[in-house]
Amino acid sequence: MAATAAETRMFLEVRRQSQSALLILGEPKEGGVPMDISIMPSSLQMKTPEGCTEIQLPAEVRLVPSSCRGLQFVTGDGLHLRLQAQAELGTKLISMFNQSSQAQECCTFYCQSCGEVIIKDRKLLRVLPLPSENWGALVGEWCCHPDPFANKPLHPQENDCFIGDSFFLVNLRTSLWQPRPELSPVEMCCVSSDNRCKLEPKANTKVICKRCKVMLGETVSSETTKFYMTEIIIQSSERSFPIIPRSRFVQSVITQCLVQLSSARSTFRFRIQGQDDKVFILLWLLNSDSLVIESLRNSKYIKKFPLLEDTLKADSSSARSAVKVLYQPCIKSRNEKLVSLWESDISVHPLTLPSATCLELLLILSRSNANLPSSLRHMNSFQVAFLKM
Image (cartoon, rainbow, N blue to C red; front, side):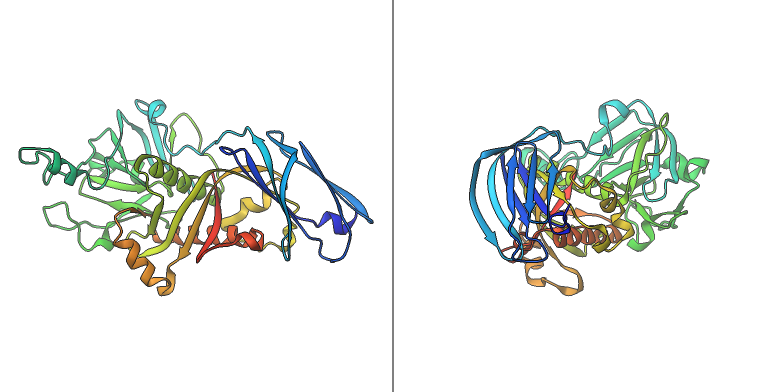
């Protein structure tokens, strides 16, 4: 096998709904080498005077060679072409919480980063989704009498779990004031002496994992704690802690949030902000039906970030469902005007995460963008990235 052929990079994006695909075959390092390319339903073959390379596509992906069109050569990228494709891969997400199967069961809450038990053997009798953040205003519009829910925040009872856009609300009354082993791994900062639910200062409401010091959530009231979905794994107590690479888990949770919110509320633009409301990323969801296949990346040229450990372990031609997004970093006062515009736009949905997780997500997006062919990295003034499900 020739070195030149072996170093040719292949990028394939399949859109399941339109049954179409974009195929990019990167040019060899040494230019001027003739190459014959053969496209078959289940494989690609590249021949040079020095050797031949054949790339087998995943079994669930089938190309239609006779449909090739739009053939062009892009300097720095290689050969671009579009064709019809069939993809049968179902979207398999990492479950954040299975409402139907885990209600009525004893559950254990784990810190996703280190596996420490946060809440042990909690029986959840009700697992309910929270309404949108503007539900109170909607009640006022629809009711012909005074709002019966005015000044009555929705707080879970002892065996409840309420699910928000990016968090869980859990009642810790018995555990918080009558300490039990299930809460020993969590450090609770002292709450305000104010009798109201408001806790001041806000920095004192953080819930921190004792083992790895990661922020897991915040205390909402003297009895209610908010746990962020990106920091907690809820598992049936009969099962052991699942070891999931951090990058994969963060991507899966974020993609689920984006897909569910865009479907339920027809919103496609999001502000990714920290728990202090500081905006880190402006994100625009383009589509959620992509299947991405990359092949023959040489790992010795990849910088090894601990956060991205699963990138190096992935099969060289594995197919992964992904959402395609546009994003703008907003750290260090970047894009302040655009942030101001998006903050005043009611069609933009805020997604609140711990600040450290916002930076993790930005690193994942930047890494995805850097791995794309150069012609696909930007769209208008935004950067392009794929978040894998």
